[in-house]
Length: 125
Image (cartoon, rainbow, N blue to C red; front, side):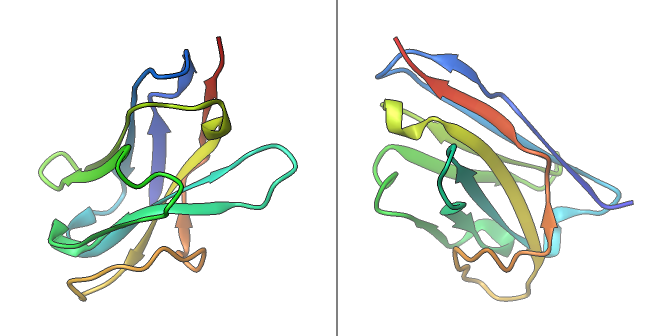
């Protein structure tokens, strides 16, 4: 059974950092692009980053560019989202998602078919 499990969320002060993980089971990530999304209370889900199959291409939303870094370790079947200089407006449930792709590029799109259950990130003093 294909499964994605996010972890690493929590409470952090403004300006702090967190590293989210997205562990895959039941399949290998080798031929899957990975996206990170978030949803704040009362707001629509927002795509924030993606990384292509193989990791040669990444993309970021303007809201996180320069502060967040997406990466993947296919040997560990895990993807990561390093979040620095966190702001209160980054507070949300963060989700990872995957889509089968042989392309060496990615798009930040809610059309990814496979989703994790999410992990809460709260940025507050």
